[in-house]
Image (tube, rainbow, N blue to C red; front, side, top):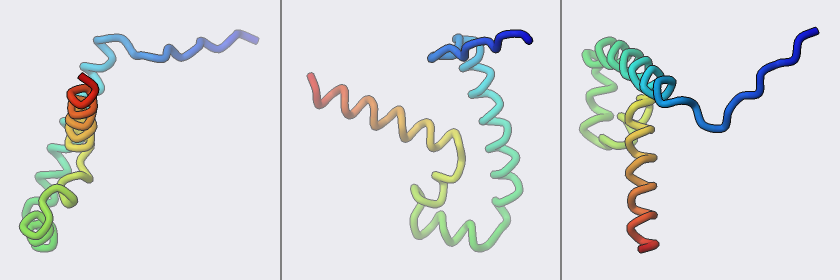
Length: 75
């Protein structure tokens, strides 16, 4: 039996870039499919942030924004 590789705590820079590009591609596909959906459009008009937060890239952007706000509060 071979030993399993330990998963590093922080992925490499290239891995993070590839993950971001992959998430953006998936989100773009989802956006193209749901853009003509009337219920999606109503959701965007009523509560833009909640409706768009189902996209992975939007979740990442919101998390980054919260990290920046926390770091500003500490200083």
